[in-house]
Amino acid sequence: MILTTHSPAPRAFGHVTVAGAGPGDPELLTIAVLRALEAADVILHDRLVSAEVLALAGPEAVLIETGKQGFGVSMPQDQITAMILGFAQEGRAVLRLKSGDPAVFGRLEDELEALEAAGIPFTVLPGITAASAAAAALGQSLTRRGRNADLRLLTGHGVSGYAEQDWDALARPGAVAAIYMGKRAARFLQGRLMMHGASPETPISLVENVSRADQRILGATLATLTGALSGLTGPVVMLLGLAPRTSSHAPFCANLEIAP
Ligand SMILES: C[S@@+](CC[C@H](N)C(=O)[O-])C[C@H]1O[C@@H](n2cnc3c(N)ncnc32)[C@H](O)[C@@H]1O
Image 1 (tube, rainbow, N blue to C red):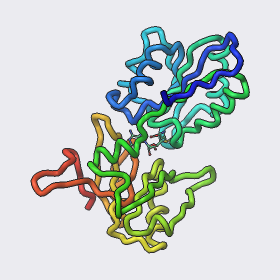
Image 2: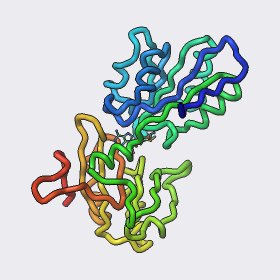
Image 3: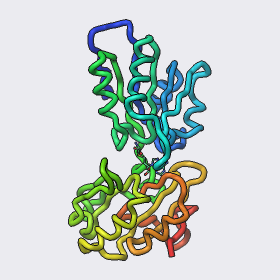
Image 4: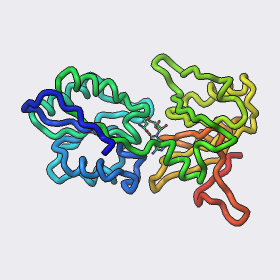
């Protein structure tokens, strides 16, 4: 058993499960998260949690969407945290459901610290992060002996604008990074990487709506990155350093497009 339940002194409180819903396809849920969905009284979920996953909630469950997609409107974090605490203090089984893995760009610690401070027991359940599902869609490995011994998960945006990174390391041949929330920062990323010596021919794959029925895979390069992104309106994870697998007979990826 690898999951830990953090239970302070027993109280008449409910329990909070903070869980990852994966990238969208319900087949990619863990059994533990499926059970939590079926058992929850209240589910507070991010907008990127798919309708197909939410359809697995118990019939009596109350579903509350907390925002946010891209730069759209979202509920302030304080308000989300207050709701989680409030429902738990009423004795409800609360499921806080985040897309992908709650520990990857999911503001997990904000909520766990509030739960700890309030003495409310919680469990964290991992999910499949967008980068893992995207690599599977490309038929590629995120790490490979002789190519890259490390893997970076980056956000395009920090708390105050575009996020600075270790550009020298990222620009090295063979470097692999998964870039989340990178659409708006694409020109910045492209410029920084090239300024630090990355080849314009460096492959970068764009996977939109990964694992969903409308998934799209675009094989681009650093040079074609911004143009390739222009038609993508859904969530996109970019895999720097990886090209979609192809074979001489047929593309591995049925819906692969190559960015001009
Ligand atoms: C706030 S982050 C949440 C990441 C999430 N916790 C995870 O582990 O995948 C949101 C970003 O994750 C990526 N993302 C999440 N779901 C995705 C999906 N189904 N397809 C492509 N990218 C996705 C996009 O880059 C999106 O802007």
